[in-house]
Image (cartoon, rainbow, N blue to C red):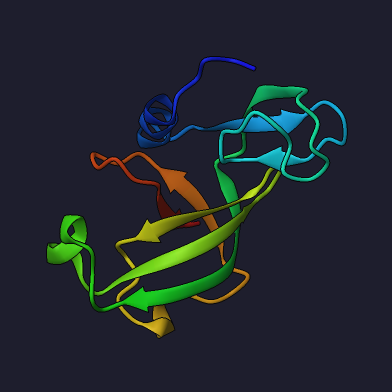
Length: 122
């Protein structure tokens, strides 16, 4: 396993790149850095770049934010199935109501000045 850190992973996301791990045993992709595969338990994990594009599989519109996003409400919080990788969570400042987004919408990671994962609709 590499010495890649969560801070480096978030920095990559701010630049529009998604890095995670893929299991050499079962092929399972995962965004959360770990020492073992979440699917089969194998320690054979390698760093992998994943597509920044994906599909919304779940969402909510946040009205009561954490401190970092206090000035952004309302905004969308989404779960995205990456085209060639795991599901990851992120936020969408363009989503102001449930009418602004649908399950099945195509999105992509967009560079951000915040230490977060930000998506935009395609």
